[in-house]
Length: 250
Image 1 (cartoon, rainbow, N blue to C red):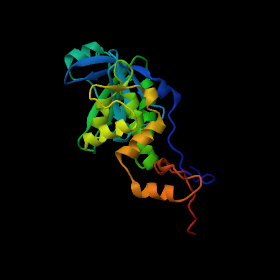
Image 2: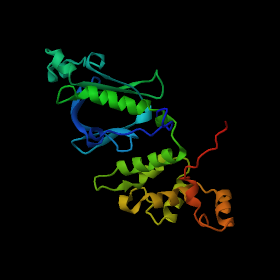
Image 3: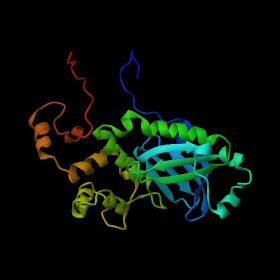
């Protein structure tokens, strides 16, 4: 945003963040150090890491409160981990460490600790991930963006066969399981708890239809079907409204 262009642009994810980097994730409580690949999804919604077993954990960017590197990052207290990272030479460790702090507020915090294989990688990650988390549009996004985040998360959490487990839909929308099942059936998708959906069978258009069946808005449907023209028969457009310029009040 500038004086010449006073429009706040959405955050941009740098290429190296989406391509990923090899780290070792460690935890003082379990004294486990595991190789992972750390990434940010291309839209900047989630920071996630994948283990060698293909198991994945993700962190909503909006939950990140701080990122730290170098002497400000967490240091392992466990003797076992200190030996793994050769803490007899701490300067070498400090050049590779990264800590991501997340939580619902500034009190209930969780520390996610990583060590890179190369020096000074943690510094770049700390700065650019925090820039995404602190961007004004990250926490104040439009309704369509939050709906898109759900779709991205569903397509990220795949089973070993590369499909979307139906149980993830029930976890994502836990209020009324029968309504979720009815919405899946309306889209001609499997609805069994142990079923899975091919991501290719769940594009954005099907996702919109699923949402319309899950959260019907008959009063909006009536508006779009009561007037002829381009809007007729397209109630889904209310979910992803086109941006319209607002009149200048001055």
